[in-house]
Structure formats: C-alpha cells, structure tokens
Length: 348
Image (cartoon, rainbow, N blue to C red; front, side):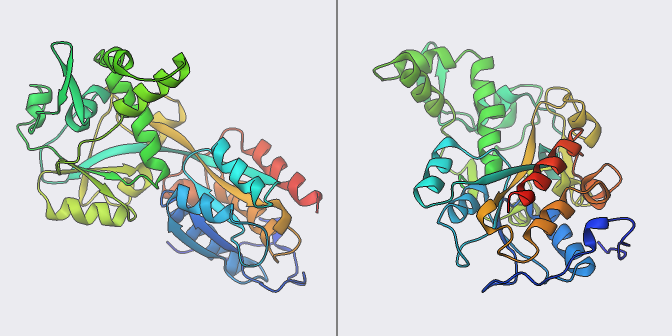
C-alpha cells in the first residue's frame, strides 16, 4: 500500500520538530501480529510526514509484546506494545513491579476473527459448538468426559463437509488465541451443555476456583495433530493452508480480506464476517484492538507523542482512512481515544 504525503492542513500534528534529548531517537514497538499491519502502515506514513525516524515495529504476539513492555523503563525497553486483547491485571502488576506504573491504553478500532480455508476447497458454515467438538481435548459422551474421537467435520455435524479435521490456530502467545478460546471454544462448550460436566469434575476450594478450572479444561485443545498451534504470524498460517487441502485457519478479518484470491471465509453463527457486521456487533467473534504507551517515555523518546496522536487521527484511523481501507473497523468513540492520547502528552 502506498501513501500520499499528508499536508499540514490535513494533519496539523505533523508540524513538529525532533529536538527532544534522548539516547535513542527511534520509537520501538512490538506485539500483536493482528495489529502489526496497521502499525506498519502508520509507521511508514509517520516516517514520510514527520521529522522523526520511521518507528521500528515488530511482531511476536500480544503476550510477548506486553512482556517486553513490562520489563522496565528506559532506552533499552520498548515504548509501545500492540495487543489484540486488553492488558491483564497480572501484566499490569508485573509492569508495576518493574517500574512501569503509568500505562496509556489506546483503542484503535475493531477486528473480527474469521475461519478461512483454501479458495478451491469445501465451503463451511460454522457454529461455536462445531469448533469445540472438533478441537477440544475431551468431550462429553453419556455424561462422561472422554478423549475427543472425531476425525471428520461431518462427524461433528452431519451438515458439514466430509473433510478431515485439520485446524491451524494461533499459538498461546497471541491475543487472537485468547479471543478464540473464550468466544468460540468456551462458548461452544457451554452451548452443547458440556460445561456443567466439566464444572462437576473440577477441583478447587471455592466456587470461583472450580469455575476457573472448568473453563481451563473446557478450552484445552487436542494435541493429536488435528489442532496445530501456529506461533508465527498469519502468513505462516496461510502457508500451512496452501500446502494442506483440508486446512482451516483462524485469522484476523483484515488478513483474510487481503488474501481473498487464496482463501474463502466461513460464516459464524449464520453471519458473514465483514467490517459492517463487526461494526454493528452482529458478527459474534469480534474484538477491540489496542496499543499501550509507556507514559514515562513520552517527552523522552522523540516523536512518541506525535506517533500516538497520528495513529488515532481521523485521517488515519477514521472510517475513510488507510487503516479502514486495510480492514480495520473504525471506533465510533475515536474522539475519546484522541482526547486520551492528547491528555497523556500534556502530562509530560
């Protein structure tokens, strides 16, 4: 994707200088592979329009990015963590232990998780229950938990194609995995009534502990090769599908929309994934996307405040901006996010 230079009248925040004193003059970003293409688009445009070096944007997954983010404050730590899920209380605690006490949460918009297979393969229409029954480590039969016996999708549901179960899902360090577990696998477990059996078998001193143990067991995926964790980014998942005629992958909507010549997408819960159905909340597997700023680095790392403001500007993250063109669903409360970013800069 290419960009035209933005004029000062279009983005007033571009009228800045790069004179802040720092041992490092290049913004460093890491985290979610879902947010990666959006952040890369913004970084490229930022480098073209501002008198600052183009930020370095790395992937690695939401959890990995937040782990690096929480390592501490200073030039040897990253400035921003991209995430396809909200930061956890445990991560906030780790950050605090390492001196990262002021964290600015920036919601950039929304994305959907889609289920895509090869363009020339069978077509699917899924419910969350299908993925739970296909991929769960154990299922309930006659009231008892047994090892998952299913090898074909039509064994899960006779209306599905007679195709071997072969799923490629994001690895555990990815935020997409957590949304997939909660909104699809756990939802499916509850839909078929298996959760109550897991809960009855769960151990724990309190009801909360037993519920947590049941949820963990419910989302535990099989390890017999039917479900394969992909620790790399979506390009690796795509490569797996291209080389496996039975493969079905779990992606972000934007990645699918930029690879429609190779992939076909399956409706979930009777709803086709699109920017429209995600914006309205009709599509059941959608999530907000974020980046987190280390506020202590604002005013120290040159351009950090400007990059954050640029990212959420109407011309970039709004419904007519390049991020929307790539697949991001614009946040209807973007003005509030812009105010949050501006306030963070005002404190330094």
